Length: 293
Image 1 (cartoon, rainbow, N blue to C red):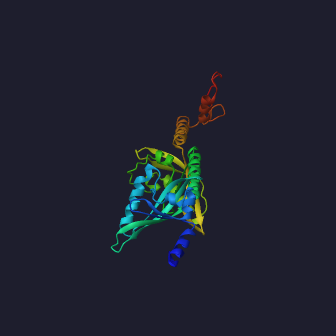
Image 2 (cartoon, rainbow, N blue to C red):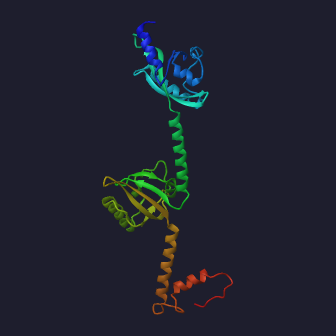
Image 3 (cartoon, rainbow, N blue to C red):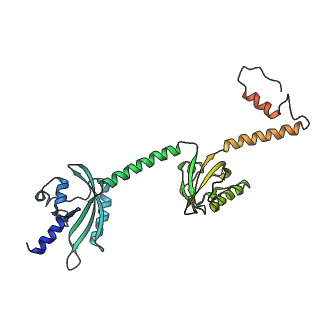
């Protein structure tokens, strides 16, 4: 071994990354010390063994697709491999490059790997936490969303999609596309625009919306602007389906108008309004003697 070979070998052996050389048949031609230590085996035992950059069948197609890049420019790819080690399963991210001959044909592969298991575990923890948070958000009466200052949706709760009967092939891209021509909607839009311009929270408001199947619903909206560096960058809000509540209120209003029309000079019965009297009848417990109205 000449001096240059010794220098290069020292550089490889002192690396914290895993370094291997692989034949085109997929067998290990060289492994550095840290790779052997990770697997708890001797170098001689590993050399000549099969290098499989995948341990699960479900990853095989992805890895195979990535490794086809090694046989065309730029002759590089990145794959992940789960390895069984004395310390349990470890995830290794490999950066692989082809060794080319004078005709630009691959003759071998070299790979540098790094243990990314802590990152994978952290991502798994974050996904689990997000799932728990989503479950908490979706279990209440309020449904959440965010949109840009120009009304383009950023996030819509799955329950809102269900409420509005959103289909995958829908051409509606903005939440305003679901608004009806009811004049009350103009006041709601005005409050949203005012929140965007001022960066201050507006009082709750109501909107009438049309679902994907043509039905009309009422929602109560509560929004707050998201401000960064003095500029509103998004609107975060929640809405509640108040369709049934609106029907009750409309019915009560119609009853009030009806009684006013029938008895214009007799606004009260027994010291109470006719509407309150009706409500008291339906609110009484069974078995209580009826009260004359």
